[in-house]
Image (cartoon, rainbow, N blue to C red):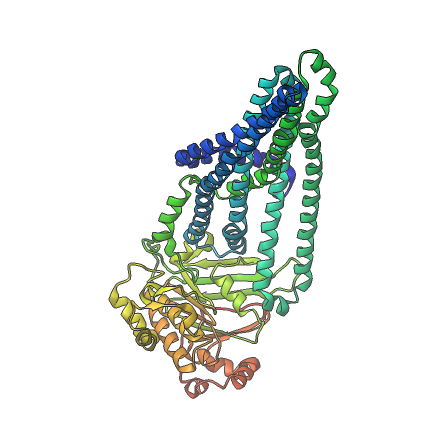
Length: 623
């Protein structure tokens, strides 16, 4: 079960193997950086070796032998050895940047490329992508830097210190090495359990982020459905699970202190205790003080830094890096992600669903329904009141449906369910006669939200964002169709630089509408995508897209959209009514009320003279 330590232990073992396997090519590609880092580290280790040895010789050959000048010369040598070490530290950090920054950049590009390639807008997938690009990539960057510094520091400090101890007396190693090895062994025994707990914490963090994102994006529908209780209960449950996981992680951290104390604190205590035996065996006073210097000044701090980094940062690093492994290696993350973010995969639709380059739509029958809702219900929790209740709807080629209703009535929820962004609680959504799970959403539907995406670049690049192979004629036709000519003239042409911050909200919506005109899937859903346009511009854009798309669904911002539609779905919570505008004016009190509040609908619709299908292919349930 996800989110439990038992399941996470097995994952942690496999993650260690996967990360190690994928990390080898990354390091091989940076052999020169590693060699330069090794060279600077050897300079540092020389200072460690000289430091303890100089203290020992200053005592034995100098101060304890009535030769203070000799003692001072040895101490001066230890001080001089610090100078190249300072330059070496500067070189270490310069080479460290060459190891750390490419890893973070590659991981960010990989997460972005994966998100664009899949085009998934499910809350969990969106939360995962956001967490990886922001929080998790920074964890990987900082963790990798800390681990490299700690591992390098301990390795070369240990080389210098152990070489110095062996030079002073091999017997010193017999006292120092056993507790060091014992503490390291105890520490290694905690790695897998600690990593498992850290994996649980990250799983729960992503789960809570997904829940919070879903709640934030559905506040209006939660209020309409009275789902405060279930949403709060779910948040409390996730918080409690996070608390338990954090406490379990803290207990293992406390157990790790025993290993740290054994490796770091025990050798300096054993050395004075073994001093009589060592001195009887020929170890000098200076050698003992030099050994103590190696332990306290060099070896113990380096060991503490290593064990702390591996135990905390290292465990989180393995968990995070494993989340980025989806068939491509860490070593080629940069090149793979670069190719993905500049190739066709990068052109996956920001508006959730138009046809990317190279995607061939499935063959479909001319009269097959473009979308169907079969007894669809949706609620934001098992005990929440449903927002949709047993709704049946069929949308055929040429259909133009407007969805109207008061704020909070579930219109945007219906758009999300129809577009496959959220799954219904009950019932089934079908596209082109197939279940949504068996269909490619990018080839079937486009959902334009109220807040459009416009990126820095040229206007032409924005319009061809969803279809890079669109011809100049297609782009020009879209500009004319939706009324973008004025913006093109103001900017100085399609290839003039465009800054989103310099556009009004209405102009941003026009750009998104023209983009949808360039590359329109069979089913086009506008979720108040014209809310910042004036009525004339809105009518022009809707008519242009209705002529372009096979089926158009408009979450209406103004009732005039209902007047242009062939059918209208009136939503008032779970109470719904479907019919032509003329029919609804006669039988729906809510539709007549909305017509009065929103400024009415055209007279030709009110008197029933508008052309429309008879609507017999659809039925609305849950009334």
